[in-house]
Length: 89
Image (cartoon, rainbow, N blue to C red):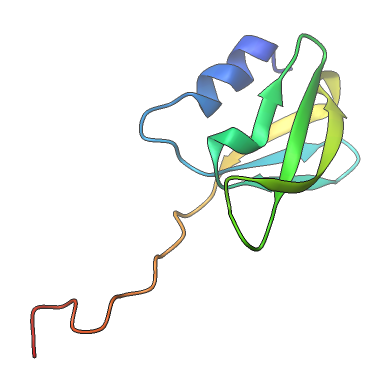
């Protein structure tokens, strides 16, 4: 069982590592930016990233903390390489 402090500590890690929040009902929520999750005493508010700005949400989902069964690390998203960014010309 997770506490709000457990989840908040995970989200506030420096450097932030994207996290998958898994519930007992089998739902999962991928969080790739720390601005997209708010931790309350009894629930989480998780934002679904907008296409225009990955640190802003289009919609939110509320999840009761008692239903969270796992916090799984996700791979860091790979940024697209800039043209000529490898040092060659």
